Length: 256
Image (cartoon, rainbow, N blue to C red):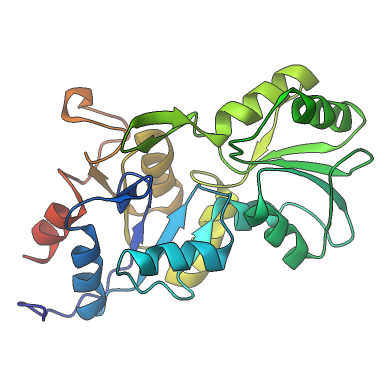
């Protein structure tokens, strides 16, 4: 039962890693905070740069943490899918989330060259062979698309290499510059605005993705210190509208 119910009309855009959980470990109070927002009528959209999971898998993971997110998840893979054309051959490095996004766009997932595009996201099994295949495709004329630029992501055990680190390796080998789709880029921003409009609050733990994403969106930036950014890192740019220890504290500050 929510103790205080006050109608909230401003949309909330919530990052996942570092806001809702660390790897598979829940951040205390975050699920309750989301439920409080939903009970108060706030439009909530979960926007993550994690590209490996499908939309249904991401929703199921949220459900496993006690959060109803049906139809309210936007991933960097979904944004990357907008950068290909129907019928294009797309070499995928990064898992089923990207495969799904390519298929929904009408593209054909391939594992070797020839390809018109290479889409790269996080891939724990990434190896030299995949680097070679992706490099060959890009040098052969394929566009290099990164789902996101994040060099790391937070887990309960500490930081781990992110999808951006893999994109950087392929870009270096192919001697080219990638195009990025997820936060903080305009492709993802357009998807958010199409659902939530032109004003809201973006909550995340990374100024270089979540904070810049808020700027691109024209939303306020709520920084939580439960993920990559810590109190010792302050001040940061862009300057947050609000800083809180975690999502629960931020929601309490905002809703009273």
